[in-house]
Length: 154
Image 1 (cartoon, one colour):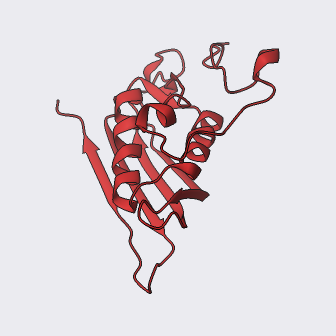
Image 2 (cartoon, rainbow, N blue to C red):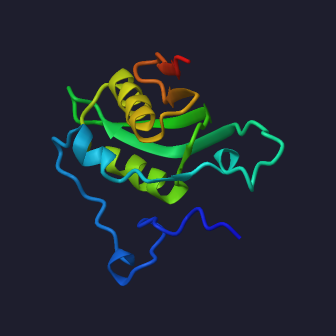
């Protein structure tokens, strides 16, 4: 059996990973947030696991995303929807959850959060395609649902 997950840190395989400090500063930047992301080999890219060459598509949703308005410091809440077709890598789900938690003290506009998430995942995964949508709770009666898309140039 092929073990795709043997080198992941977020799954708590070592004693030092049993407690995780989620706190980042109120002025956290992209590097502070992106450090939480991890990846593992995509089963579609392993010949023994994918003898027929099927295409894997993933849909990831979380309703627990929060960030801070850069102007008021008030929390913004969103459902984040990620649809992607991996190439050689998949994002590890617990690491992704920790990554999203790191946004809770980050001051960014809705659009900036979604652009950062999409760019961080493109850099980590080099996917065939990815779409990231932020379905933010309306502020002032106006809903913002920014979306970013990336398609690998072949």
